[in-house]
Structure formats: C-alpha cells, structure tokens
Length: 207
Image 1 (cartoon, one colour):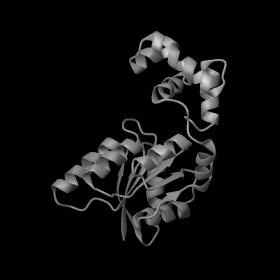
Image 2 (cartoon, rainbow, N blue to C red):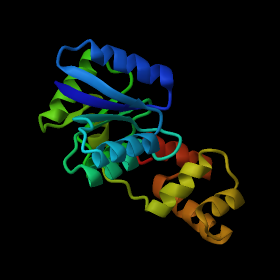
Image 3 (cartoon, rainbow, N blue to C red):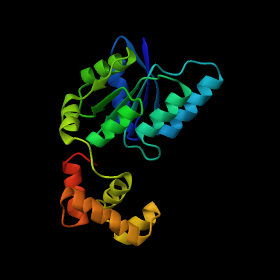
Image 4 (cartoon, rainbow, N blue to C red):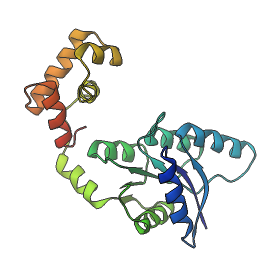
C-alpha cells in the first residue's frame, strides 16, 4: 500500500482528489492539509513520535504561504529521497525546471484524470519521473531564458499591474535600479513596455 499526503489550499479540490485516489486498491491518503506549513508540522510531529509519515507527497504548486516546491525542499530535508509530485492549474516551463532542480520527481496539471494521478504516484514511488508530456514539450521548445533572477522578479510584479515604485518597494530595490532591470528585460524579449515584456516572457515560457 502506498500512503499519500495531499496539500492543497482549495479544500474541495483536496478532498475530491483524496476520495478519487482512495478508490485505488493500492493507494491510501493518510493526511490532507491546506498549507505547506501545516504538512511540515504534521511531518515533524509524526517523526518525533517515531511514526510513519507518508510514502508520497502530492503538493499544489500555488499555496497561500510556502509554495509547493519550497515545501518539497523542506520535506526532503527531513526525509531524504522523499517522492514528491507537484500539481498546478497554470504550469509553466520555468516552474518545471525549478521543481526538477529541487528534486521533485513528478509534475502534472490539475486537469489530469484520476488515472493519471494514480499512475504518477506509482511512478514517483517506484523511483521514476512523471512529467506531463505537453509541459515537457513546451519546456524543451522554450529554451534557456536570458532573463536574470532580478529581471524575472520585476517582470512578474509588472505583470500584476504594479508601478515602478511599488515594484521597487516589493523587491527592496531603488526605483532607478528597478527601471534598469525592466529596461534590460524589455530589450531581451523585444518589448516596448514592461507590460508587453511580461506577456512576451510568459508566452516564451520564461516566467
């Protein structure tokens, strides 16, 4: 029996997934949490009590506090080689690369079927990777991003409609430095303004 921990801040999604996976004869959901922090607390308490945790963790990428990848890193620091499967509503090549770099074994969209989820869990539990084919193809076609981490951060915030001053405050940079980052990013993606640069970078799979 493969035991599973699920984390999703949408309770309906989490409970539905737990119910569907529970129908599989070889899968058992042992805990459902609404945040990465909640799962980490549960994990530490179980380990401290000398109890088993879970064989596989299924983590939503977008969470209110720690995101799924940061949660995966923290879990794997406590349980080496823990198989983790990341699920998301908005998969991007950059996120997949970050997940794989962090030791995550599986990555698939929430639109996947129950059978896909079950297969993915069995795959990562057995030591194999399970990557959504469409996202894998998109990641290969996207190529390496020319954007620096600083340029990525300011572009992400620009895409939310923030002003230069608001972006500067959010990333703890001077407005002049923020403008330079935005200008460099615009040049790299061939955009006329920061909003077009954000859209173009997302289209290319660099954000």
